[in-house]
Figure 1 (tube, helix red, strand yellow):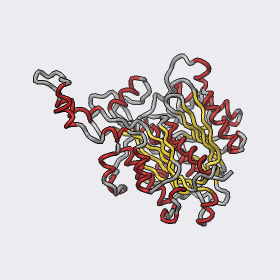
Figure 2 (cartoon, rainbow, N blue to C red; figure 1 turned 180 degrees about the vertical axis):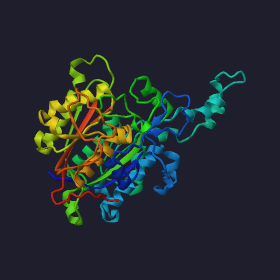
Figure 3 (cartoon, one colour; figure 1 turned 30 degrees about the horizontal axis):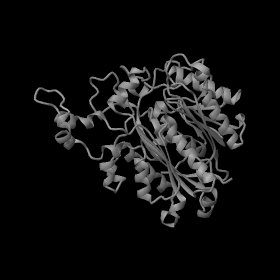
Figure 4 (tube, rainbow, N blue to C red; figure 1 turned 120 degrees about the horizontal axis):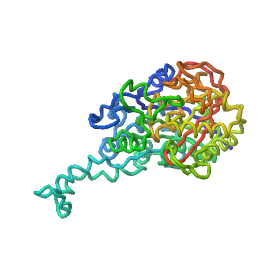
Length: 442
C-alpha cells in the first residue's frame, strides 16, 4: 500500500497567520483567547473567544465571487490552502488535475440570525406585527440571494476545487471537531488506494456567533466570567471550567511517497494510521450515560484502529495530542479512552492539549492541532499545554507545561473528539530522512 506524506501546511488561527507565528506562540505557551470584538458582547454572559485577527481576505483570495458567496470561515480555508501549497512548493501546472483531490471538514456554516433581520423588518405591518402577506413582495427584496449558497457545507470545497482546478476525488465532513481529522484520514486513504497523487485536506470553522455562544453557555460548557481571559481555558487542569469558542482554518498537502521522491523533496511527516469510533453521548455534558458511553469506548476504538493501521504498539507512541476540551466530563472520559487503548503506556507518554492556546476551533481543530503535532515531530519538541498548572488526579497524564520540551520523536498520536460522540485518531510518523530541527518553515 502506498504511503501518504504531508509536504506543506497552512494555518489561520487566533495566534496568527502561517507556520512561523503560530509555532513561536505555541512553543512559548501563549494563548490567542481574548475579549471578543466582532460584535457587542456587553449583554452576553460570555465575552471571550479565539478570534482570527488582522486577517485581510483580499490578500489571499483573488476571485471576488468568494466574498459574495462564502462564509468568512471559507475565506480562512482558502487562505490556509494557499499557505500550505506555497510551503509544499508544488507546481500545480505540472500536475494531472484528475489526480488532484480535496477533502474538507467544516462546521456550522448556516446563516446568522442577523442576516434575516432586514427581511423581517420589511414584513412588519403598521401595528408592528409580522404580516406573512408582505413577505413575497417586500420582504424577499431584502433577502441575500446567496444565503442558501453560503449555508452549503460543500461551499468551501467547491471554491477550492474551482481555484485549483482539482478534478480528482473529493470528500466533505461536518462531524464537529472530528471533521478536520476525518478530512486528513480520508485523504490518506485516497492516496493509499491510488486514486490520487496529491490531496489537499482542510478543516475550517467559525463558532463566534452570538447564538452559538449562547447555546454552548446554556449547556454549561464555556469558560468565562471575570479575570484573565487568556488564562480562562485550562485543559486537563483540576480547576478547568470549560472551553472558549474560536475560529480558524488549517490545511495540509498530502502526496504519495512516490510523488514526493519524484519531486526530490523531503516531506514533513507521514500520515501512517487512521481510525474512527463513536460514543452515543455528547462529550463534556454531565449526566447518565448508558452502555458505557461515558467511558469513551468509541474513542478507544479509534485509537486502537489507528495503531493497528500504523503497525505500532502503544509503547511506540512518543507523544499524544489529546482533544482536551477543558470540561470535567470530557477530559476524564477522553483519558479513560486513552488509557483503555494504550494501557500502561498512557501514563508515561508525554501529552499536550491545545484548546488553551487556540480556543475551540470546531471543525478546524482536527487539522490545526494535527499540524501542531506534525511540527512537533519535525522539530523534536513537545508543545506545552497552555494554562495547565494543577494536575487532576482523575486524569493521570504526563502533561508538558511551561515551555516546549525537547525530545527525540518518531511518532505521535492525534486524538479528536466531536460534540455528538464522533471520534477520530491519526498516527503521524516522522519521515526517516527528515532532520529533527527546532526550526520550522514559513
